[in-house]
Amino acid sequence: MEIKAAVVQEKSGPFVIERLQLSDPNDDEVLVRIAAVGICHTDLAGRDMYLPIPPPPSVFGHEAAGVVERVGARVTKVKPGDHVVLAWDSCGTCSSCRSGRPLSCLNFFLHNFHGSRPDGSPTLHRGEQVIHGSFFYQSSFADVALANERNVIKVREDVPLEILAPLGCGVMTGAGAVMSSLRPGPGSSLAVFGAGNVGMSAVLAAVVCGCTTIIAVDIQPDRLKMARELGATHTINAAETDPVQAILDLTGGGAQFSLECIGNPKVFRQAVDVLPRLGVCGLTGVVPPGTEVTLNMDLIMNARTVMGILGGDVIPELFIPRLIELHHQGRFPFDRMITYYPFDEINRAVEDMQKGRVMKPVLRM
Ligand SMILES: [Zn+2]
Ligand SMILES: [Zn+2]
Image (cartoon, rainbow, N blue to C red; front, side):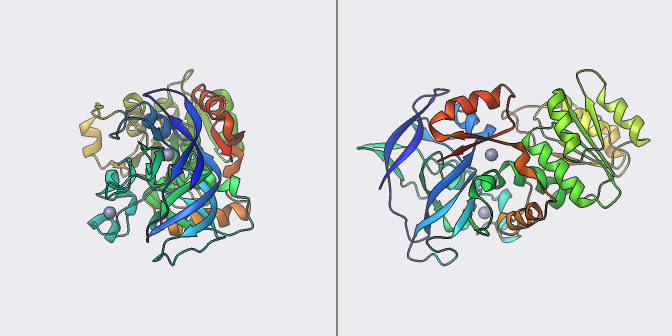
């Protein structure tokens, strides 16, 4: 079928909206009419070729919500008309998937960054030319996308789809890192480094978990203000104050949990240095491959834990409906982070995100 998609023609080039041809769904695939899609830094990492993906022309986009239009012959999970959120894909058969941790799938690259289906067959064409697609098995910077039954999540229909778009990556990552990986108990302390989309989702999750000391660290005053509005009990502007000393002081010896949401070796070091004994530091920030960090080995040996967390380490199919339920009850207002743009203004949305003017741009189809 013919679709409208935002194509990147060359490395770091602009998004150009074009007509492309999308393949029919295979037996295990789902055709989704996209209502809205969030823009994530990973889309830009793909555009700039920081990911191990094939070269452009490509269609990115991996934070979509929409309505099922058609399903393959063997699909039983959803039917046409169902509302769905799209998340990361996984193989379902490796040891990570089989142990209930699909976001750490051992075949992640094949299922998300292959530029085609895992079997190598392309899904997008411009005439005779193959366009790389299947980004996170969706390539949802488009009005229609082809997903797999595995990465489609059926959601309740009384919540506007445009709100739900960012749940499948950024919000899932920040909230999952707290609620699924770190699991702070009621009354505990958590320091979040980086109050962007992921960090802010972590702050919201810390409130849900009952943390009584929630510290947000950033260098942008407007983000710190929003963090306070969303439940941070303390904020630290790291451009003005040494965050390590400030956190040690205000927690009386260290934050039991910390989370790095920026992808910066210096900040990662700070997030480890604020831990007391038995403290746990989670790492969600993405860095270029090969980036090294210097840590105090003696400190870690003294009963600190450092944990790398992919996508919040959740089962999206279980976790995303829970977040929607919390949102519905007014306990997880993640939509406060969203700024909407028409699909045609994707380049303006990207620029606003890169300049820090908006936290989570969402394109409306
Ligand atoms: Zn797997
Ligand atoms: Zn993402």
